Length: 366
Ligand SMILES: [Zn+2]
Image 1 (tube, protein in one colour):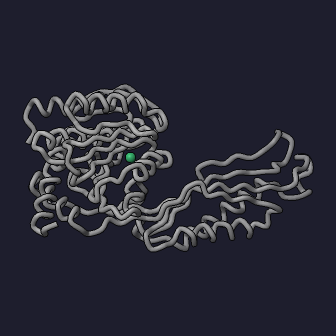
Image 2 (cartoon, protein in one colour):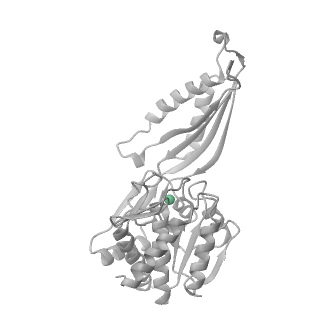
Image 3 (spheres, protein in one colour):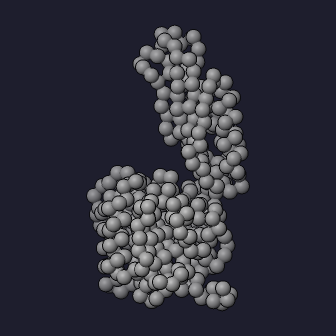
């Protein structure tokens, strides 16, 4: 359990993190704060890498676990406030609550001499450039926990994959006073969106984590107020479940573009990552034990419809899970908040976890 002093220290760390704005791409000030916080407490091998990620270890030994959280938030700040046992502020739950819980438990583990690595990454909300760079720069531990709001008893063991694609249609431009002359690029784009909806329905499932979803997130068209648009551009955010290959979806979307019979189109995949399922290994076993020990109630393994940095680590063979305080209901919203009691409880879970893991590994003689 946390002492009164520890509770105060952990809360002030959380409040500082939430008070420093850090929208994706502008994490520098927060990185510096975390760097200083780690230095003042005697963490080892502290560095800010070229991508802007902060990395440190609790001891000189090889860490048995990595705690990875993201520093960036979606844009838009609003005043930080404490009310009714909740802390309000941009990033409070996604993911400064989980990140602060990781940093503070690592600090407690340092004092017990347990080797843990902490990694605070940039740009998770954008294109996961931070974790991608960190994985290339220096290996993370074979056992890694990613910090996202899962809730104190819940562990996220699966995410859908994601494809971000841009589609652009081109057609002849013509005077808006004679729309019967032909079809504009915008009409082809609208036809394409209709086809997308029909296509998406083929993959619907009662369980949303097993379905494909397609969301048009941006659309632009038009040259002038009196000209039929000669080009129309769409951005698609597509999420895919584990049993479907991303290549198949990309190929199908291209076919749908062709079916519109637009004179010309262009499709570009900006980003793609397969779905990820956490292996049922030693880390999951240790997590179940740590939650039971710290909370006195069993862990619940859940799958989420989103995607996260964990997807990239699992692809590299890392045994990863996602865990952290916050219910995820207010994340990205204008009343984003975190319940403090849950925040303190997850610090206890994350303090138990490496010790349980070490215990399991020594039982198995690994
Ligand atoms: Zn997040």
